[in-house]
Structure formats: structure tokens, C-alpha cells
Amino acid sequence: MPLLVMKFGGTSVGDLARIANAAAKVKREVERGYDVIVIVSAMSGKTNELVGWVEQTSHLYDAREYDAVVASGENVTAGLMALRLQQMDVPARSWQGWQVPINTTSAHSSARFVDIPRANIDAKFAEGFKVAVVAGFQGVSHEGRITTLGRGGSDTTAVAFAAAFGAERCDIYTDVDGIYTTDPRISPKARRLDRIAYEEMLELASLGAKVLQTRSVELAMRYKVRLRVLSSFEDTDESSGTLVCAEEENMESKVVSGVAYSRDEAKLTLMSVEDRPGIAAAIFGPLASAGVNVDMIVQNISEKEVGGNSIAVTDMTFSCPVNQVARAQKALTDAAASGTITYDDLIVDTDVSKVSVVGIGMRSHAGVAAQMFSALSAENINIKVIGTSEIKISVLIDRKYMELAVQALHDTFALERA
Ligand code: ADP
Ligand code: ASP
Ligand code: MG
Image 1 (tube, rainbow, N blue to C red):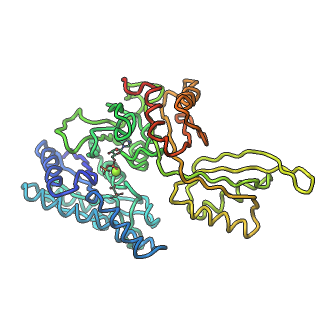
Image 2 (cartoon, rainbow, N blue to C red; image 1 turned 90 degrees about the vertical axis):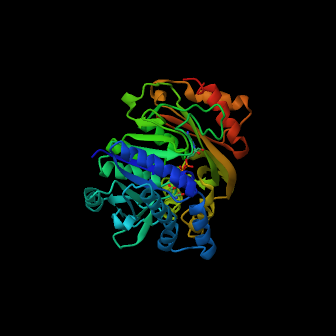
């Protein structure tokens, strides 16, 4: 039997009527002759509520219990979806991660797949079941504990099942009708793309476009999964939505193909750090050990007067997610207290956002950075930090200008036009 993976995100299963709507889409594919693996998210808002309950109960919580609690949202949806399908005379059953089993590492709250043995689900298909409804976002460690894959992880569950079961396609049903040139909630001029290359989607996702979890795009690229994003609220057919595919298949070749943003960033600057070999390691080692995801880094060499002599010092600036600032401050003050680093001051700015432009065409086109900077300058937006790679340019700016910057960049690169 040909097999499809269909994933429904939180809004798409947000209440019983929406679960029924999603189930009808599944039934249609079964009637077309497919066996279907359905991956479900928790009903919208549920995971946030569960995370809140954990944080209110325990400040420095046990990550294993966090996972036990937050994974439960998906279990509810999986059971309800299976019940709804049964009501529609579609032979279906639900699967929690441990029942499949979805084997993962034991890195709680950011676990990775180890393997997904097919035998149990294949046996049920052989018995005549048409649909396996699998709880997304979760797995089981080799210690037998429930794990989760990080926020947005059901996308990654879906792609992993598509790869493991050789699915014809992996369809991600969500509350937008595809992948846009930027978040349609931020820019009314955002345009839906018919296709996007894996590499571009990977950059957009990792730079903040949460329409797909970054890991899901990585897996799709590695295992050549045909990945499609489409609306769960519209009638859809084979040509709906946006296909994420190999670069050769992607006909649209603009220099810049999308703008992404990450709202809640912070910028930290260590003033007058001693300028000597090993200083970067002495700063970023403890930050890494404390679990701080450092993103952009800038180092400025300067001098300071000590006892009439001028000595070389450096100001070290880096960015990280706002919710990791407390951990970063503690790691740095601990390092200073133990004498491994010295600095005059630690300046923290928690009101910054990152805005990025992405495009494979940048590999062969000069001048994108200049065009980006002049568009921001025309709006009087000050750039605080710049970061680049082969196919992206990112800037850190004051948060209050984030929407404006996204719109200005969308305009300057004429992304509203195909
Ligand atoms: P789900 O609950 O279905 O997983 P998410 O909220 O995780 O849905 O992702 C869908 C959302 O991603 C959209 O509602 C949209 O606001 C946001 N988004 C951000 N960037 C983009 C983009 N480039 N294209 C489409 N949607 C985007
Ligand atoms: N429910 C989880 C979350 O909200 C996983 C997902 O929806 O993909 O992050
Ligand atoms: Mg999501």
C-alpha cells in the first residue's frame, strides 16, 4: 500500500470540531488508497499550559518529569483522533511514543531520534488497520523514560516517520496555507511560495520562522522526504501548499527568497576583557556548559590605561535567547569569581530582535548586504550586530523596530513579486 504521513498542528486540532475536520481529510486519503500515519500535536495552548504548570510547581525542575507532563498533551489528541476516525468507519488506533516505540536519546526536552522500529505499526496495517495515529513531539529513552523533542517537535516526528516508513510524502497541515516569503502575520505583503529549497527552509527555520521545526527540515533534507506545508482549514489537493524540495526542483530563483525574525533575543557585552590567547574559550566554554545557546559574536579590540600603561583589551559582544540571560550572567560572574576571566562591566540589553534575509542566490550575487543595510538605514533603524553565512545575513536591532524592519526588507527585495 502506498503510505502518507499527515501531521496536524495545535490549531488544526484545537477543539473537537477541528479534530473531526482533520479526520475527514485523513479519511479522504484512505479512500484514495493510502495507508496513513497521522502525527498529532497537543490541542492549541495545551503545551504552554502544561509547561506553566511545571514551572509553577518547581523552579529548577527535574527534566524527566517536565517531559512526562508536557508529552501528555499529544496523548489526548491521539486518542481523540483515533476515536473520531473510528466513528467515521476508518479502522484506526492511537500510538504513544513508547508503544511504537519511538526510541530517542535521553536529552530530556531536546531529545533526538535513535530509531523507529516499524514492526508494531506494520503488523497493525497488515491486520487491516488503515490509520496509525501517533502522538507527536515525544519518545522514550533507553532508560524507559518519556522524552520530548523540543517545542514544535511534532514536525520532526512527522518527517522521521515519513523517512522510516518510506512515505510517498509528508504533509504538514497547519493554520497557514503554505510557506510564505515572511510570516504573513507580520507582513500583509507576504507571498506564498509554491516551492522552497531545503537549504533555504533550513535557514529560515533556524532563524526563527516557526512554520517548521528546524530539525524536521534537516531530517527531510537528509532522507530526501518530500515535505509539504498546507492548510488544514481549506479544501486541498495534490497541488496545494508549499513543497520543500531539492534546489534543482525549485524553479523560482530569486537572490533573496525570504525574511525571518526571532523576536526575543538578548545582547550581552563584556567590557574590557583581557586580550590574550584563550580568552574566547574562557568566556564561551562556561556559557556552553551552562546550556546557553550563543548565536552571534563580535569582538572589538581597544586599549585601556592601567597605571599609566596602555594594555590591549577587547569588548566581547554576543547574543542569546532572552530566556537564557540569567543563566549567561551566572556563568560569567562565576567565571569572574574563579579568576578565569576579568572584565570591567557586563552590559545586558534584553530588548533586541534578530531579522534575517535568506536566499540561495546570495552565493553568486554580491551587494545583498549593502542593499539590506541601506533599507534599514532609510527607516532609521540602527544595526547593533551583524552576522552572515553563505546564504543569509542577520542583524540584531531594537525590538520595537522588528516589524518595520521585516516589512522594509520584504519591500526592498521585492518579495511580493514572483
Ligand atoms: P502548528 O501549530 O500547526 O505547528 P505553528 O504555529 O508552529 O503551527 O506554525 C505556523 C505559523 O508559523 C503560522 O501561523 C505563521 O504565523 C508562522 N510563520 C512564521 N514564518 C512563516 C513563514 N515564512 N511562512 C508561513 N508561516 C510562517
Ligand atoms: N505541542 C508541542 C509544542 O507546542 C509540539 C508541537 O506542537 O509540535 O511545542
Ligand atoms: Mg509548529
